[in-house]
Image 1 (cartoon, rainbow, N blue to C red):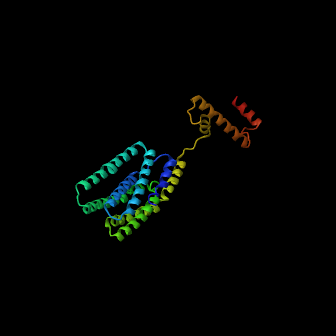
Image 2: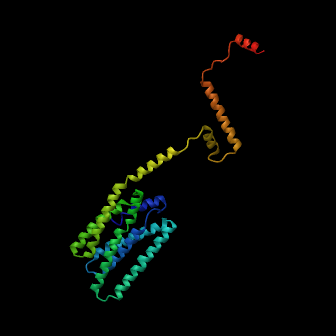
Image 3: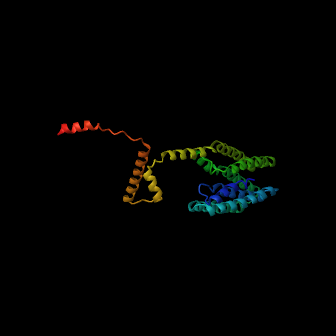
Length: 275
């Protein structure tokens, strides 16, 4: 279930046709950890279950990384290729060569590889902390998949008891930290899952309030020009037409004003006096 948890995330990437905002680090580190556990399982007796599960993990993580590379921006794609080359090729090859040729005792070799697996299992759980930092900074859980956090936490509990029952503390110890990190991620998800929606709604409301009111003439110019700049003479003509139409509409609605003229005799007297 852990290896199927990222499927909704990559479905969203497929719909958006871009992996921008998502990180490949958890999948690259997860692939490296699965490869190490397979190598460790070959050095230990009765580890068929460990080999089977991590083989499925290697296959799944390889698919996710390939999918990510297909939709990632150029810079993210280059960073992912560098990380895969560094961890999954150079580092893994170096570990195999050193333990095979410099460590002669099989039990010692298994213990060394077990400690390396322990360290990088912790890295698998620490890898999403970059996303956690992004969630706290942006107050949005858009790029932190909840299902992955949930199933990693559940898997950590199962592997802890598996290692405890086998008395293999290389398996049990890292899953204690894995459980803790998983719980932290789920708590953050519950805290910030609605914060992003509220911020979006608030920003949309403020943007709507800040839009300047346009006069009728300006609206007409936008309608005629479809957002293009009209000639100055044509703009003035449109504004004059709108003003004239507005004045005519107001004059039709307003009651007729009384004539402010004196009576005719008084007017004649005034004219005679002036002469």
